[in-house]
Amino acid sequence: MPIALRVLRCRLLAMTTSELSDAPNYGLVTVARFEKLADAQEHALVVLAMNLDCLITVDESGYLIHGEEAFVAAIHEEFRLYDEEQKSKPEPAVIPVFRSGVELALVWIGILLYCFARQLEDPALTERFLNSAEAVVGGGEIYRSFTALFLHADMEHLMGNAVFGLIFGVFAANSFGPFRGWGLVLLSGFLGNFLNAWLHFPDAFRSLGASTAVFGALGLLVGSGLDAAWRARSYRKGIRAFAPLMAGLMIFTMNGIGQPGTDTLAHMTGMLFGILLGFPVATLLARKEG
Image (cartoon, rainbow, N blue to C red; front, side, top):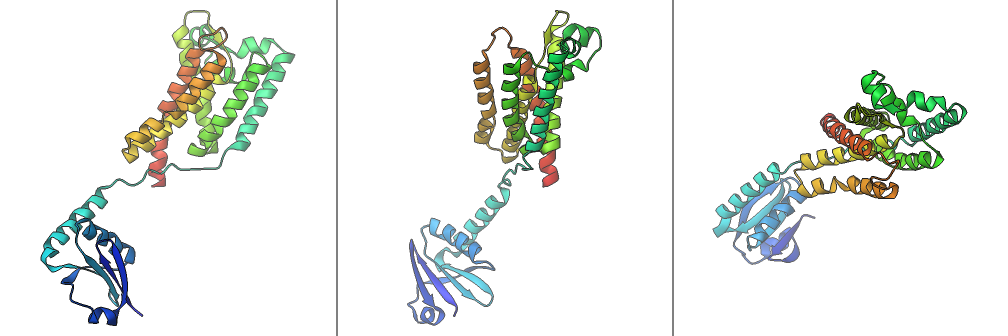
């Protein structure tokens, strides 16, 4: 049986259609009609916000909102303003989520372990493939900026980078996709190493380790968060986007900022390229998903 809902200020009263016809005249007239109950209830709240009584009834044509006859024009204007406001609201930002990329993370760790074993067998490999300002910039051996990501000074160095790389690499894979995410992590590390070598040239600078790529992953997360904040036009989300930077500072602290053996500039350049790559790629992915 059709029902009618009596909304009086903040009180709700249910009546049948026949009861409604026998009820006292509340001075209410039909002001709007909706196909969905949710839309009718939503606009009824607009009337209540005006401190006016309203009534929702249902018949074969849909859901009707009744309001006080003296305020029909005002109610219609409030409905118009409310509908325009809803249309102007930006769509919620959606960050595409993909498979975790754990499998690729384990492959990456396996490669690091293999390369370290080869370093122990043949120490000359370290000197041949580490990042060197003289070799990369002066000698054109640009590949060293990439191969240095897979070399480490000792097991402690390797395990630290493997653990943090696994965590932040998987996060990046969740945001960008497993292959795309890990590709961006390595690309950020490569570009970070190259810029680091270029900034040190012509000094006899050398470095090795996956930490540049680890901080590249952090930068990718920052870039993805900034894209989500930009599309949502949210200042709060923009602030939260820099949460990975706090994680980076924690890693800096654990490794000792500026201490011997810590290449702080490489960490910064890796994160820089992660942000520069992460923001536009996240934007393109969001457009594609949309």
